[in-house]
Image 1 (tube, rainbow, N blue to C red):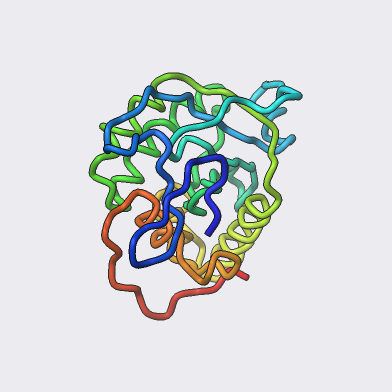
Image 2 (image 1 turned 135 degrees about the vertical axis):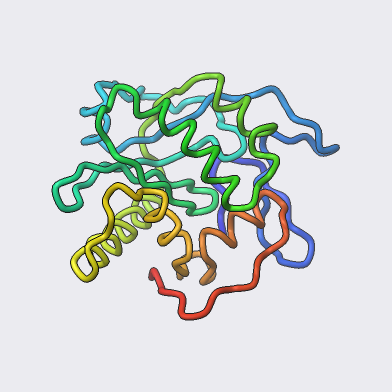
Length: 209
């Protein structure tokens, strides 16, 4: 797994880089950094934001997120992805003007469900600083987003997903094995990145090449 734009530390016993930005070596919280969203061009137009020519400041722990808009059935959605952990978060897109604020609150709820009890203490202050936008940089992160969207489209064709249950969609994607990241699930990568114990792997996991 590659943690993009964050400090890295090998997690003892698993050999996976640990995302440690936002936490000093002695475990103390560092000054908060701003939420960084890297939208695709189509999403940036809908958000009404201009993407700066120069990259934004270095983001903190899990505050960098790629984002792409897509349609599922008759609904408009955005899929956010952490390049550090491949954790996906699906949200209803409209109204676009308050999407960053809604993402802020949904993310805190989601990562606590993933098992990070310290999220309000560590991630909360960083998200509260504000939001900045920047151009996408990592093609592999965009590729994972595209493949996750394809999975949702196929699932919706087969079983008609509840389009109001976006957290359920996110959790469904978080249990897909990502071949490009050592056949780990986003849940597994996330738990290693924030230093919490792994859970027993579920059976019959799907694969994302």
